[in-house]
Image 1 (spheres, rainbow, N blue to C red):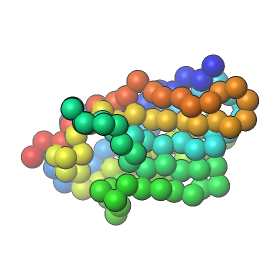
Image 2: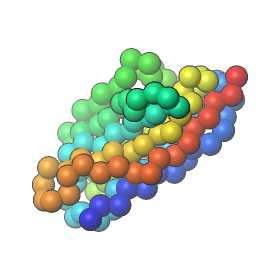
Image 3: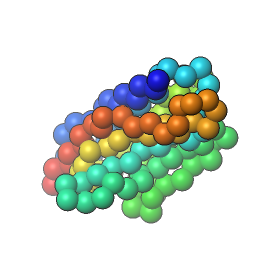
Image 4: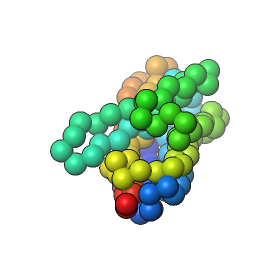
Length: 118
């Protein structure tokens, strides 16, 4: 069983910064990919950024140059440094951990709220 726990959300003014953290505990193997998604009210969940086990990163166009994803592999922890935040970045941010070894599969956290005021 995999437990995914996020932290670090909050309220920040436009132009400010936040750092999100996520840990996927349980498996003794590394996740293939870990990533951050977000969902604004009334909108679909969308990819923000992801990083693979060979450190290949993928960013949504709307965060390029502002957000940075990083990962600690031995304990399946991933971070999202968010700078130059905009009101449109407001939403619930979810962490995802995908395993291809073992029975662990695709796992989501409960989400952490990020609110950016103008």
